Image (cartoon, rainbow, N blue to C red):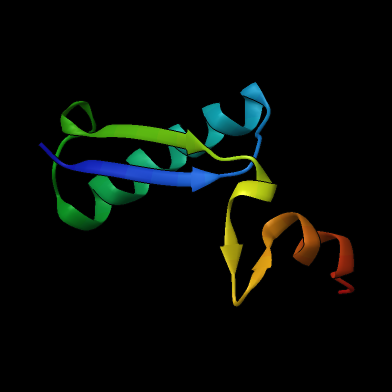
Length: 66
């Protein structure tokens, strides 16, 4: 059974719904495995509990300028 795990900060219920639907659909198309065989989990980590390059995600988001 294919398993997709996604880690993020806090998401809305609608964002979670869309992620689960789209990740499943895309993976099923690429792998040629029926959608009912996929399991998707979303692990939510507070931004201050996860870091990249020595900085927390909340710090990176505060300083991000597109």
